[in-house]
Image 1: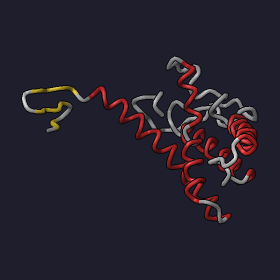
Image 2 (image 1 turned 180 degrees about the horizontal axis):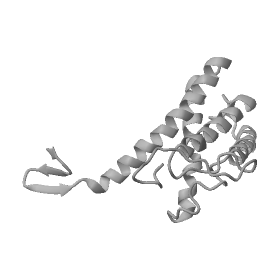
Image 3 (image 1 turned 60 degrees about the vertical axis):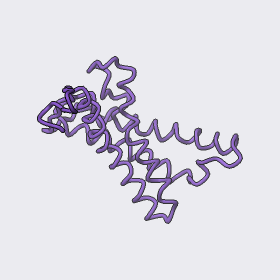
Length: 166
């Protein structure tokens, strides 16, 4: 039975707060996953492409900009940097997708990436990663969304308890 921040199971009582970090991180990532998936679904429906493949592609690349946390040591100076949260980074992710798609076509006879057409899938990758930066710029931490066009850190009013999770 869950009561407040404690869980009671028989005679055992334990604090569930350590799991709240994981839950918060997943919920905040869900925003980015759903936005990317929506981009994939939109392209698939507009261009009559394989919907599930593009939804998964958008969802996966919707979270890619937050991989900078792995290299930051959870330091604020690296997370949400222009290297991962900007229009330039989104173009870079889309350009990096092209050789991945081409290499799997050449190396694997029946690749799981065979259903992706180059131009639409590259646009899904670009928009999914760029909309991630736009969403993060709505938070009080902000990010340099339009780098290198502008060095301005765009900030919004949305406040989260954990800046690294979102």
